[in-house]
Length: 316
Image 1 (tube, helix red, strand yellow):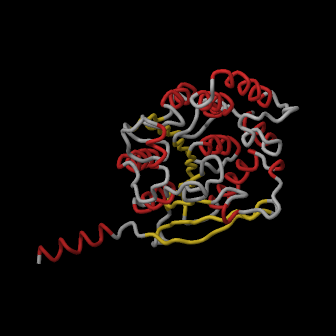
Image 2 (cartoon, one colour):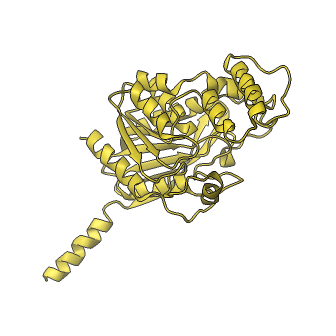
Image 3 (tube, one colour):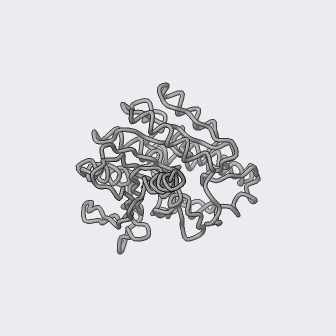
């Protein structure tokens, strides 16, 4: 009899956080943003909703893009849902199922990404299934989350995952300095400074022509005007900052800048976690890039626990 009771208890334990998957959408100024919502199978119990915001480039709701597939955000969403949290992840505007027909890249603005995050927050703040809205932004999405939280009264907390602490033009200078020849670095730095000042380039540079393409410059300018540290300092809601020690794109020093700006933030550095939130001791760029295209490599085992521990304290 005791053995049977134990089996029933274990069964209930592992099914306590069952969740359902729903395909959802958000209408935003004649644009439809598509996403996937994971929520509790028990509609009588309201739960916090974590909204995952993808990083830069053509990154979809799962953390993938046409060049690489690692399923990092899909894994994180399912892990958090299994831990008892609602999770929404969505394709950024213009990407994957949120594709915009005849999109003019020059009309795309970083502010649109912020507006979309605010739109999702407002949509689900009115949903009785959820009692809190937490924005969790990865990489570029970290800045989107910070900005959206400062513009939306319905956001209750922010999680920065591998987020920068400096404006993107400074980050790009550092990233490009690792691959450009010394004689190219000064020229590219000058180009970035011009864009950061709000001006487009009079000539398109041969070096990194794709990055500085005329159609992309307005978006870069709109992105560069936001300083992550200043946005963190303005926050009126709890902030969790998570970075990994083997992140080859956004260093731990960037997380330190965010923490310095927001002293009340919870600060967690995960040893041997890279930019796509997976375990590796490898710091070599080329060796790490192989991991970016491994959809079966699991998340770093400490990531979900770090997030859920903070959420439990935050939700008391």
